[in-house]
Length: 300
Ligand code: NAP
Image (tube, rainbow, N blue to C red; front, side, top):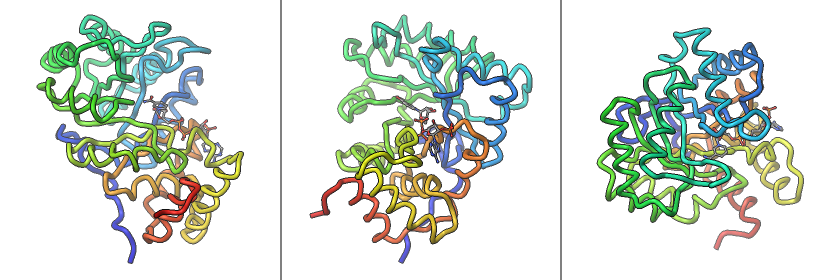
């Protein structure tokens, strides 16, 4: 018997917003030419993707803080219909070299700055990128509620938060937390085993899985563990006539929390492969064989 297949679209937690079950991300987007940026976005739409994830900090380093949002803003200026076709997610709260700031004053300004760079009047999903240990959740809640009331953000999520941080913020925040964004891939299985995905199911959080290919290592494995995981994925991929990367996305989506892989490739042909993830069905034995390869030790 095979595991149930994920739907191609679903709800973003309790937000009432419909999204694709696969997202596309812009961590590696800043610095592209406008035409390449547009080609990547078109490839994502063609693959059935409607959820697009960026962050104010993307571009920091080579291009500069804000440069990924700015580039997306230029794409929107060039083709204004694209904005309304996507569910636009961005993040704030990291401010090098501080490194984290979730004070109400900072978050309020960060949201305004993202809106300005993106050239839009609303962010569909606004996420705190990393927890700021030094801000009381009551203060975060105040900033989020004000931005939500003002119509600047439609829904609110977190990223890289612990379970306790999510539960505590949820106690204080009148705007529901609808999503969490942890690192999750066949090479990074912590959330499967530490209760984070179970909490997400309990709270109806959409789980956005960052670096679903382990930053590309599933395509290009470099040690024995990575090769074992890649091998387990390749066997299933070959039997369905799809790529190993499509099998990796599909493996993530097969979990009952229905995590949403955020495709990180900026290459249109590779982005197109994401749609193949829906062609795969998993037996329990195949799914667990990937997990065992990732653990490196047998299951009890
Ligand atoms: P990923 O899919 O794990 O890695 C993408 C990288 O893998 C790209 O450099 C891509 O190169 C390469 N790649 C893809 N297919 C490959 C193949 N078959 N062989 C070898 N290399 C391959 O995702 P990611 O970019 O690390 O992260 C995805 C998204 O997650 C980001 O865009 C961002 O939205 C989000 N994210 C969030 C956080 C957070 O803290 N919340 C942190 C990191 C990322 P090409 O572009 O050349 O295909």
